Amino acid sequence: MINVNTLLNCGVQRLALAAGVYLVFLAPIAAAEGIEVYFQAHRGGINEVPENTLAAMRHAWSIPGAVPEIDLRTTQDGVIVGMHDETPDRTVATPDAWKGKRIREIPYAGVKQWDAGASFSVQFKGEPVPTLEAVLTVMKESPERQIYLDLKDVDTNAVCAMMERFGVISRVIFVHGDIPTCRELQRKYPGVRTMTWFSGSPEKIMEDYNTLKTEGFAGVSQLQFHLRPAKKGRHIAYVLPWAFLKESVENTARHGVALQVRPFIFDSASLQMLYSLGIHWYVTDEPRAFYAALAEARLIFAPRDPATPTAN
Image 1 (tube, rainbow, N blue to C red):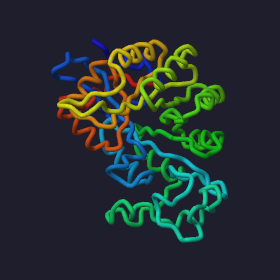
Image 2: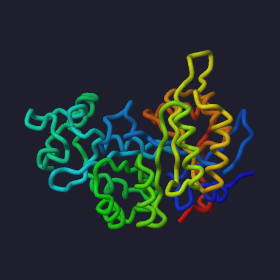
Image 3: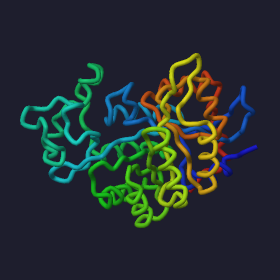
Image 4: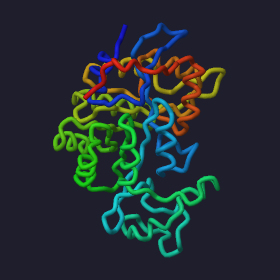
């Protein structure tokens, strides 16, 4: 039997556990009490809510096991805001004066006038582009909330200083595609959690993984694989070899690293299979649907005993 402490020692140490949940897996795989499943809500859940908004963060935090991710960029006058793209054109309606302009070239006085929700749905009309400070203020409403911060175009020192000022740095996972940047973050701020990802063809993912393995997974707390589906068939299958995934779970755990996968399509059966390999961290564009698939798979989130120890 694997308990919470065992899991914490296998890659999620220093992690504040998500809102009063733990996993009891009933069938068909043998249960492992105390193991928890978490899933990153990509940009808050881009298929269910307008990306990188406070509405998206709240949406993800309302779902047991979900941890929202937000992309961060800096305005002309140094305000850190939630925005994935270098320009606002794709996600918000902007005056002509700002079309094609980089966020870095636009003052916050302009950004705060934009509507980041209407293009997704009239339900979200008037949803603003959030500042990081506003997001952290909402995050502090509950001590169990965690967040992924994707550092697109920001001063990492300024971001970490804000985390420390809010007292939430232990609840943050910093995301960057550049592994040396992850290492530098951990060097300057010992104990912080970092995540990077590998994508592309199976051969490219395996090559990148093997390189990082020879380096002892240095600087990385979580490693994400993009998990693309194989040709459509009766059941969902993925292009990454099953044996490679199993080996990766075991190797990363030995180094205190959590393996995370991003299945671009999923159902209850495919999640059962991934769980059977020992994968307990996921990424999804649709956290509500992902949670429903977990429930259908009979991965049941139940209230955690208050006496269960949590990480520091």
